[in-house]
Image (tube, rainbow, N blue to C red; front, side, top):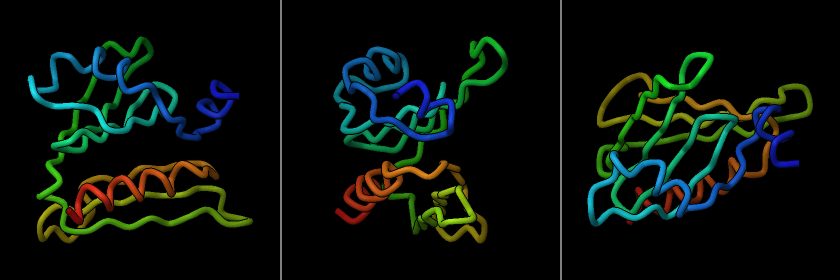
Length: 126
């Protein structure tokens, strides 16, 4: 079901140790992964210091965009859950006093959007 969920656009929780190995060159020495979600090839990673969004691009996925957002830079965020007719859930993240969201992530009807929102709230509101 995990692969099917990923192909349908649903985020699935991913193993923290596996993600730490994958992000070995991105994480600093003392940084630990708290929570990670995989969306087909992409990752949303919550560490003890920042939010990392990993966007694997192209057919082979060799080109990778790493977006690093320190929690202290996040001024606000919103979660829009899916409905009966609108099947997409959306997470938007604003940085400092920006008018437009710095990041907008789309999810299919998915219970993990709530877990992602809770992890983001816990990190930002500390």
